[in-house]
Amino acid sequence: MAEAAVFDVAIVGLGPTGATLANLLGGAGLSVLVVEKEAGIHPLPRAIHFDGEVMRVFQGIGLREQVLALSRSGTQGMHFVNAAGETLLIRGGTAALGPHGCANNYYFHQPELEALLRRGLERFDNVTTLLRHELISIDEDDEAATLAVRRLEDGAALDFKARYVVGADGARSPVRAHMGSPMHDLGLRQPWLVFDVMLHKDVDLPDHTIQHCDPARPMTYCNVTGARRRWEIMVLPDDDREALLAPATLWGLVRRWITPADATLERAAIYTFHSVIAEGWRRGRLLLGGDACHQTPPFLGQGMCAGIRDAANLAWKLEAVLRGRAPEALLDTYESERAPHVRSLIELAVRLGNIIQTTDPQAAAERDAKFRAGEPQVFELPPQALGAGAFDLRQGAPAGRPFPQPRLADGRLLDELLGRRIAVIGRNGSIAGVSRASAERWQRAGALVIDQPDPCLAQWLDAQGADAVVLRPDRYIVGVARTPGELDALTQLLPVAP
Image (tube, rainbow, N blue to C red; front, side):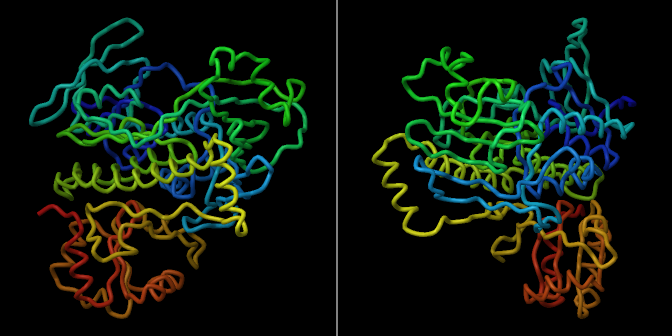
C-alpha cells in the first residue's frame, strides 16, 4: 500500500461502514487512508442482519460470493408472538431472488464479515490502512484537511492530508465532535440484555426470528448462522443489572428453550437501544457515516444496513467530485437524501419496538385483541425513497427508489453490465430523439447509454408506461421519461461539472 502526499479521502474508523466505503473508493481508483484505533476486529457478535440492498452493495465491491458463503438467507422472516403463543405479525422473508437479485434478508456473524471486508482492501495498492492509530485533531484549509494522528504503538505523532475526511468512527465519533454536529433523540432509550450462545448439541429451536411480545418479559430470539443463537432480553425497571448478568440468572431467563448442557455462553452484555440522528452530516471537507450520524433500535435489523447505504451514496459522489465530473455541491445532497431515509426507518423501528416492549398487561391484552381480529399481517420492509437531493421528487415514484436488479438474457445480473456508471436506458427512439446538449451531458458524466434494452428492462419500462429511465451509479432512479423531451429534462438533473 503506497502512501499519497495528499489522499483523496481519509476514513476514520474501520467498522462495516468504513470498510465498505474504503472498498468502494479503492475499487474506483481513489487514494484512500483508513485510520483505526483498534488493533483488530472486535471478536464478539454485534450486528447479525442485513438486507438485499446491502448484499447488492457487497456485489458492487466484488465480494458477493464470499459474503454469501458466510451468511444465510432468512427464509421464514420475523414472527411477532404474544405471551399465549399467538402470532400477531410477520415480517416476510424468502430465499427467492428479490428486487436486488438476491434474497431479501441475510443473517451473519459480524467478525467474519468485517474480516472479509478488510481482506477486500488488500486488493488495492491505493488504500493505506493504519491500525492502532488514533485521530487527535483535524485542521482544514482551502486545499485539504490535515489529520493529526497518534501511533499507539510508540506514541509517535503523524500528520496526513486528505481532500475529504469521512468519520465512520461510531456512536462516540470524534469527527462528529470536531464538526459540532448535534444529535437529536427520536424517542427510544431502552436497555436490553444481549445473550449470545454457541450450541454444542441439537436443540429444537425455530429457524426464524421470534419477537416474544410478552409483557412479563419482552424478548427476541434469533437464529444467526451455524450453531450461533441470540436472545435479546428487555431490562425491566426493577432489575438489578449486575445480578441480571450472573450466569445463573442468564440461563434462568431462557430455560424454557435452552440449558447450559445445550450451549456455551459466548457473550452477555447490557446495551441501551437508542434512536438518534445527527444534524449536519457535512461540514466543508468533513463528512459522517454510519453510527457517527444515526443510531437505530434493532427491531428492524437496519443499523448496519443504514451505514452501508451511507457508504454507497457517498462513494459515487466523492468519486464524481474528485474526478472533476460533478460540482462539489453534489456532496450537499448526501445528508438531504440519506437523513429522511434513515429517519423513516428509525421511526418504523421505534413503532415496532412499542409493540414488542409493551409491559402493561392491560395494554398488551388490547394490542393482542386488535391483531387477533384478523389473520397475522405479513409485511415487507417498505422501499423507502431517498430525500430531495439530486432528484426531482415532484415526479413521484419511482424517482428516488432503487432500480431492481434482474438477471439479463445473457446470464449476467444487471449491475455487472452497468458497473459504477450513470446509466441511461431507452427504447422506441427516445435516445435518438434527445437534444445534442443531452448527449454531450451524458458523455461528460461518463454515462452508459443503452438504446436496445434487455427484454426484462423493457418489461420494467412497460410497467411504468415509459420509454426511458435514468439511473445513478448507486442504482437509484433519477426518473422515467415518456418522450425525448422528458428525457432531456431528466438529463438536466444529472450532476455534471460545467
